Length: 228
Image (cartoon, rainbow, N blue to C red; front, side, top):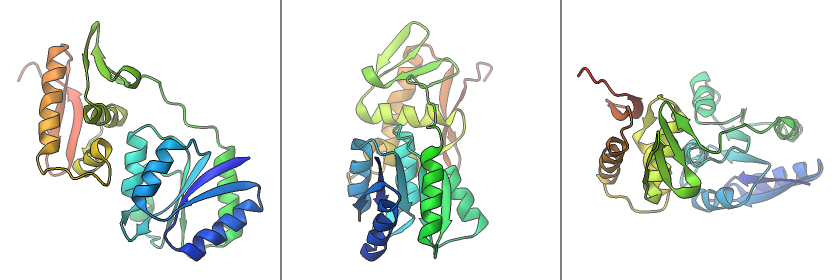
């Protein structure tokens, strides 16, 4: 039987969704808080996820970005009271597979979930790579050619986020969430310190890639400009 994870703070709505999906043979685990869902979605290999965007303790999109950065590839249906085009685009860019605005019928939600569950899972390399750089989660290291260097847990999550973005910029807040999660206290300069260490490690293994500061947005991997 398929089992999905649901993050919905409204208890009555959550129970209605669970009942509707149970009728379709889909079991549902309910989470009412982002921090609880972040832990559960990482530990349990759910067939799919349903995440409400508007939550008292944060934005469901931020949680989804963090999950994608950490390698969670289960298809996700995002629930939202917002239906503007830019909100739907934001959800898809954050890693959502489908977007269902409120109010919705339970029949439609069930149909959407059935479609997501039938969809083949996203195929990702077990060793994410970008240009000359590989990140190896199993051994917590990154490699360029024959040279490799170990990574601290937060550094590993940062590099996974950057490598999987494949040169696209990643927001500062998304990197902080990937590295330290939602509940840990992070000092204002923690990300800058971690990126400084990563830059030194990339130089140590002779990578031709650098971590560039995308002004006003975040950071991205790019080819090193040797002519500069």
